[in-house]
Amino acid sequence: MTFSLGDLERDVLPTLEAYCAIPALSPHFDPDWSQSGNLENALHLLAEWVGARLSDAEVRIERLEGRTPLMWVDVPARGTDQSGTVVLYGHADKQPPLGEWSEGLAPFNPVRRGNRLYARGAVDDGYATFAAVCALEEARRLGESHPRCVLLIEASEESGSPDLEAYLDHFGDRLGEISLMICLDSGALSYDRLWVTSSLRGLVNVDVTVRVLERAQHSGTASGVVPSSFRLLRQLLDRVEDATTGDILLPEAHCPIPDWVRHSTQSIADEFGDVVAKEIPSLEGLVLMGHDAADRLLRRTWVPALSVIGLAGAPEPAQAGNVLRTSTTATLSLRLPPLVDASEVAAALVEVLTATPPAGAEVDVVVSSVASGWASSQLPAPLVEVLNTASTTTFGGPLTFTGEGGTIPFLFQLGRRFPAVPFVATGVLGPESNAHGIDEMLNLDAMVHLINALAYVLSHIGGHP
Image (cartoon, rainbow, N blue to C red):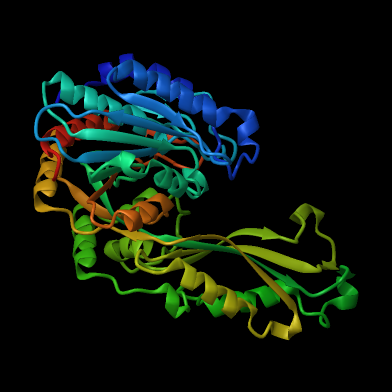
């Protein structure tokens, strides 16, 4: 395959950078998205580019009432014996800026530095549309056949894909007989090979509030008599997590780790070393959880973990007075193993936090997010062979499978709807890509390699892998 960085610079970068300049925030972060028009503008830009590149494709922006729009691209097969349909998935909505970006960088002002493009949405997930279309173009340019392909680009993924199921219902038989799903919104531990995601963690987020007073009181009057809401919150957290080890105490949040996962994880650790520790900007001297490289990979992908990601009810330190506060609220984010039922965990979490409130305090728990994880079924051997050849001939390294620590609800949705269809979740969210963080970055060389790898896969799988 011969798609090059020069081809990317000429045919892709101008439009990709224009897309990056649109603040197309996901609905969770822009409730007025329908008025701002940013999601529509982003999809229109992508649709115009796709239509100009694939003249025989049906390119539509689908709209359901009360739902974010979705781009549908139906590309007819080339060649003979192409009976199946390959669905390629990506999304156009974005995370918010998060904070101040580094000097010279800004979320919606794309900047290229060497082989890196910095902008919000560049790697998560703006590149997906361009990679899929360029791969099809490359296969055709080389005279190769490919199956019918349907490209779905949704606009609510960063909000948990609440609109995707409705669109899948809407499409019905239009999708046809799906032979393969390729999801271009996943990660990579390095840029020297094709990485395929084998699992994703689930997630339960709750807001827990502990109230002790109707009005705040001077600490000289109330402390030592009125229990601190923060201290009582700590007691509740101790019901969920061992404060010393970080182990999660809810039985519902655990599942057995398959032997093949342990073996695969150990192989990655043997080749790459302590990859988790290397990529985390921890402070010098901090003792990370996990006893070795393989254990840290498992803890990030198959072991439940609790994070307190938000706190309310307390003033900034500079404004703090000697006051016993009325309440404390904590937002808890509980990451779950791939095979755990997130709904069951959410119910168990609410029960353990609200049962017998400490000191008779008022405890409220509000569930804000529930998403089960996902684990891939074993891919057919011929497909694995094609993927491995694509990896070695385009990236230069062998195909490698790994779990991811994040949550991608659409994979659970698609996996539940199409249980017999092979899934290839891949992407270039690799080292220093900073998805969801400041200074989000797309590695352009990796994108070129992925385009060539996809072109090889699409031209060698036929209708049925």
